[in-house]
Structure formats: structure tokens, C-alpha cells
Length: 295
Image (tube, rainbow, N blue to C red; front, side, top):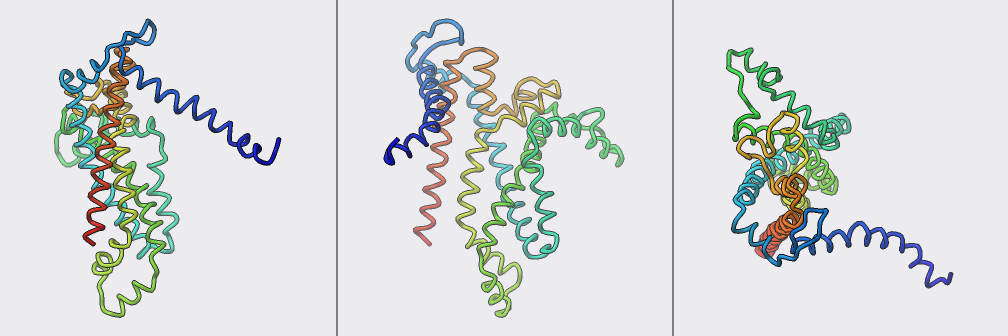
């Protein structure tokens, strides 16, 4: 083996694995999206019929997209706000215990979705849940949290906030560590309050972290599947919860592909979701770039 060929030989296994388990499935699913296929029989080419069905005939696609936007639009700003405030308080007021508190806040993020779904199902169970037991102590009636549309959404939103804000906290802590302490000391000498230092120094200098956190949160929000699926399956609810109020686009894809065995239509749904995510990411990038030009 020559010196020129050795590097290519060393990276060849990666490219082979990527082609086999990454590139090929992407291209294969793209081809499947133009067919009618149940996964067993022969594929029948149907052209753009699946895509037309997604946008003009399937009312549950728009409902799942709307549900995803609701869950994403409510939970993401709260996650980012809590993550930023927690990171700031840990850095400013809990320096001695920062590592321990940081670990405690980050633990929910690395908890498996199966455990999260079971925990929240037990917490919000109508008859024996901890939340209803707490309400009963104050004379309030039990709430059927997982049996009504908006209460089910509220449970999922709370679950997403609890699980994911610790990740945002870690991101903001990493950004805060790059801000020189001299800036804060100079602001203190000038008489700036904590809030003034937070709004005039911390937030502007964390702008790159905000961009990263917002865009990744939007992308991950559109891919939401594990937690609500496991939560309502373990609670004995139909797919998507009551009145399909928490059915996300990925749950709709799963339902079409692996329950109804419409792999062609499911692939079309997946690529429509890709287009939605790409469009949302492009809009966010343009908004950020526009603000940068104004600044």
C-alpha cells in the first residue's frame, strides 16, 4: 500500500457504511415515495399521487402539522428561557455547587424516552396519579389529563420542557464561559445592576448560542415522536391521544407506514416533513442574517 492510497483505504470503511446505511436508504425511500407498496408485494409506480394525497386529501396531515407547531411553539420558548436563566443563576450565584446542580438539571435529557413516557403516565393517571392526588388534598376534583385534547397537550408540553431544558442550560453555560469576567466587573464599577448586565452583556454576547439552540430546537421539535407515542400507548390511548390532539407528523408517518403498511405514502410523508423542516430552517437563517445586517 502506497502513501497516497493508505489514507483512502483507512477512510473507506466509513464511506461503505455510510453508503449502505445512510445514502442508500435515503435514495431508496425517495424512490418508494413515488410508488404504492405494502412492503411485501410488487411496487406500483404512481408518480406524484402520494404527494397530492398528502396535501389535498389527508386532513390528518395538516392536523398533525398543526399539533406539532403547537407543541413546538409553546414548549421551545419556555425551554430556552428556563435554560438561559438556570445557566445564568448557576454561574452567578451557585458557583460552589454548580457542577452538582448542573448534573441534576441535565439528567432528564439523558433519560430514555421509555422511562419518561412511563413516569409521566404514572404521574398524570386519572385514578392513581400523583398530580391528581395532590389536587385532591386541596379539595379539587381529579382531572382526566390524558383523556382530553388540551390537557393532553399540556402534559406533553410539560414533559418536553422538563426533559429538554437541561440541554439548553448546558449550551448556555458553555457560551457564558467564553464571556470575559472583566466585562461584568467593569459594568459593576459603572453601577450597572444584575439585570442591566444580563440584558446588555450576557444576551448580546450569547447570540451565536441562541441561533444554534433555536434552530436545533425547531428541527428536533418537528421530529417529535418517542415521548408522546410511549406516553399514550402506555396509557391505553389511541395513536395521537384523544381526538389525535398530540399526533405529530412523525407519528402520522409511523401510523401510515408501520400500521397501515402504506410504505409509499409514508415515504412521501417523510419527504414532506423534510421540506417543512428545510423551509423553517431557511426562514430562521434569513431572520437571523437580517438582524445581523441591521446590527
